[in-house]
Length: 350
Ligand code: NAP
Ligand code: ZN
Image 1: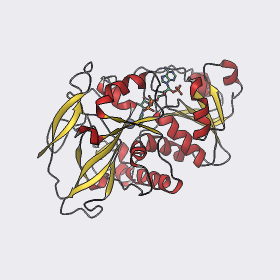
Image 2: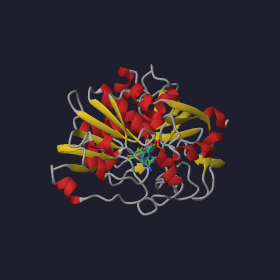
Image 3: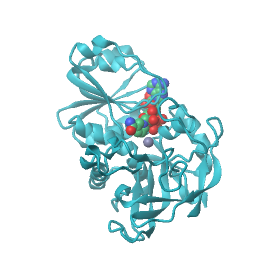
Image 4: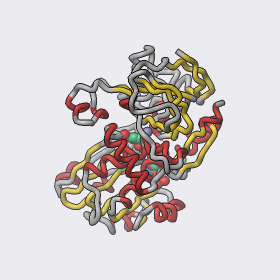
């Protein structure tokens, strides 16, 4: 075991603060990574503040972070996928049973015995797993991804959650040229959704509550931008969407978006607000519309997404921050004041 500097929260109401955590020495299949950048996901904030207490209660101290890129510093004897010095990335999962039908299908995100990167029982050390707000991490090679060499690392980190979480449902629901696609909420996930929908050739409409983000939305790849508080603008798109990705972090009127779907259209929730959303049955019944959710993506698809980003030169638009600014960054997330992902420069932890 070895010590690593990290930032943790001691309770749902305490700010994140500097600490030391223990990491395991790499076992034969493990890769040890020096973390260079870690993206700041709104899920980190939900988890740190125990907003998902009914589903995933937070165990303190909590070290969040699941958008990790870094460099391999050590490998176990059986590691074939990486060598010391390679770039490497880790997302929201660090383990799964590898034997269930979901794992065999490459859909590890649905494994019933999986381990998330933080706040999950740690099979090796006991306690819970600690995430990427840390100088280093040790992960089984099966859950370590390759980072295309041409990508900016600060901007690549958010691909590991915001990227795959938006890419996967778009692939699943057949977003392609000729489809009309909506993206609700221009935050970390939403802005990646816009980039992917645009790269996949769809006609992209962004729904935002922030009029100040209009120009950015167009620059990111939107064809149209709707200020969602404007009922007339919303009505203009009634019954017209093939697919809508809802990436909003707080309570909102999802019914307003269901009404914008055409027959057999789908709206997928990736945003995970603290409280239940109200849904009118007839909005779904009339038009045979569907509402789904989607969690991140499997390892193979995450690699596919990273390679897609390498090919199309796609990264997140990031504001790089030192770890000391993390509490301020959380407050800004709550004000929708992020353009469009905070990425922590881990050198600031040294
Ligand atoms: P974020 O960067 O904070 O963006 C959220 C955006 O939602 C804001 O920028 C804002 O966009 C909009 N918004 C915020 N409050 C709103 C309100 N009261 N009404 C309407 N719109 C509002 O968050 P994120 O990191 O992208 O995460 C978004 C959500 O996805 C979070 O709940 C997170 O936990 C969840 N998530 C899920 C998965 C998954 O696997 N399904 C993975 C990662 C994250 P505008 O300013 O454009 O309105
Ligand atoms: Zn995330």
